Image (cartoon, rainbow, N blue to C red; front, side, top):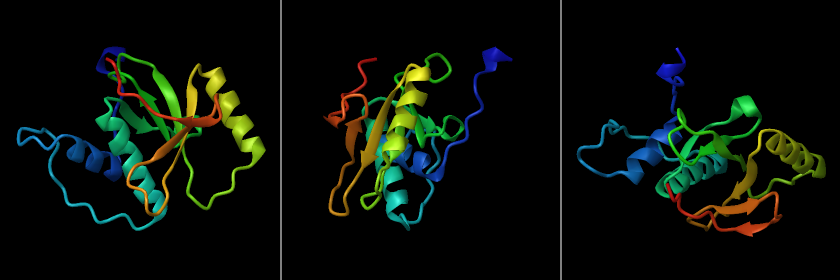
Length: 143
């Protein structure tokens, strides 16, 4: 059954981001009306999925790896994930042991870690690459 690929279950935020990224009338994703985000975390989740999807990445849930999302540079059936994403709310304090944990988990899986955050007044998420510990611009997917 390895030829069938992974079973995909998209969250409401991922469906909303896919709809936003592709406004074509021929879009296979059925239009659904999502309620506005109720919490800052929901707002951040939707913004990150939408932003990374528009950049050409595939974004799937990463709970089984201990992260919020796994980002793929191509079709997840044919490609390995390249990044783990941790959603960091504006008022959250990060503990040093969390940074070490995320870095070790990612290094073991040969991936990088992006911390994604977004202030109340910001329209797009900001990403910090944990390996560099500096603000980074996520480039569009070349593939």
